[in-house]
Length: 366
Image (tube, rainbow, N blue to C red; front, side, top):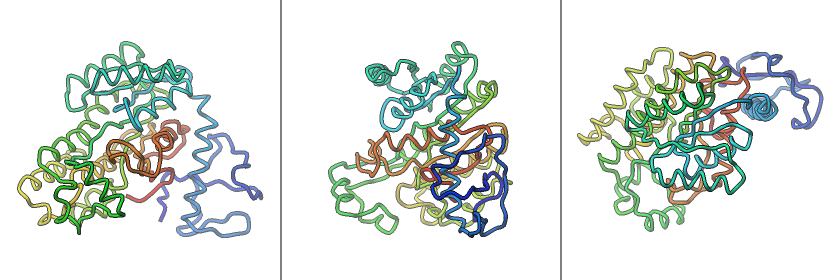
């Protein structure tokens, strides 16, 4: 069932092609849900799955149409911006006139990325070093943004890692043969993809605590924006179905009661159980464990923040199965295609959805 809280439902004129619709101005769009299962489009009833698709296309069109009105003197920070999806997010935002701070841990690669963008004709991108695990590095970035721009309009938390030891040749052969890394195959993955506590800890520290650290440092500057946006890169692996522990799953899904402190405790409990070899006993994922838990935590954190800052538009996004380093260059989408999803959310109109998880371009369940 589609949540009632922030879905935008329009009255459609009698036209066959959605893309030919003349959309109303954002302030005229009403938040209406006719009933739990169906809404009326002209004289027909259409199912909620179709409604979500229609709404997503409308939101995307609204973002495109209003982007030109939002980019004047707008500033964005994109973490992990030196390659892959992050690089493309920087390029696409900058191409719309937004000044982008490309943040990356490796200074040499970050500077090279900015130079590459300049060679593509994109000049309004600057580099700043950022290690999301280092509080001093995060504070330095916040100070840079405050000193140079006095505010921040868009934060895209893209930096992340998979928490795995990848044996590239064996892994690509495994995937190319049509296999998938699933919990029922955990005993047969040795020499293909493996987990260590050190990798799990790095993954959680980067993907979850690092995202929190950067967000909290930049929140005061985002509050100075007329249209603040936060986009947290998530994953299809973030879905709660991968956590078999019903109590933990229920806690992560109950955003009305879940607090940041408790969320931190759950993530730390996962790390303790990982170290003590109790993943199976306590109902945690057995494969890609730290990545799944960290991204599930990011989805929960996204909803907590959206509730805390109702004037922000804050969403998490699975960009799709994108060809990047993290997938050993396997995937179905190019980085350019994958970046369109978070860019759409970064450019949402002021009455756009907030507190949702988007599977590519569609609102999805957690």
